[in-house]
Image 1 (tube, rainbow, N blue to C red):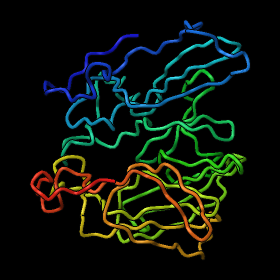
Image 2: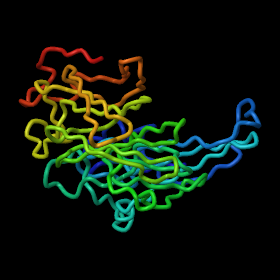
Image 3: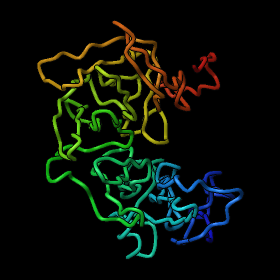
Length: 322
């Protein structure tokens, strides 16, 4: 396996494109891998991992969110291990290959720099209802992959039932076979929650009204609720305060955690609980404890380089991250 030369239009390389993080060019199949020790004969399955991997030297504004999706898989069967990796064959990747170069700008590029928001399907993989799905954190349709080959079958709309987007960090309840997901947008209601049933078809969805567009990245799941977020991070398309990815953190804007009944009934109100202004990239777990709900996650008090007034956080009082 070889790495492609990583460069970004003559600029200084970010650390996530160098060394062991340099993009991988080749799609390979490697059978009968050397094993230290012994693999149990009864151990059988495929471990798959997704991540960003630029197929061409990226252009302006490239961030670690922007690389094309590449899924790596290690299969264990009959005491033997094999490896394979495949790019997720999205239309954007096909356009780049046809042009012989990256044709989209990165998420750190300023307005007007070029085409953006390429669905790179690079954030997560999930196995549900017999399908292996590759997902992107900004949403859109997931991509179904073959098993165990990891080749791209194409976009998956669950038999034509999915009319929403599906962001990367879905939650599967292995007891019921349900897959809960969310979709976010810049227009009202700004957030929707859905569930794919054990049969692989959309079983229900409902809107969650927010005061405005909020950056969304994860949800959490308990036996009774889907936990959603109205955090203090919004979109700033003009990049007025921060010439980076267009996120605008307002520590004067309250953050809230919402409890959505898992039945997703539209007449069941969302119960909101206000917390200190913060941002949460990822949740760890959640559970019901009597009348209470416990959530574990990574809370960040100062997630952007500057505040909403354009002041660097280095010049502001320290905020403890939890």
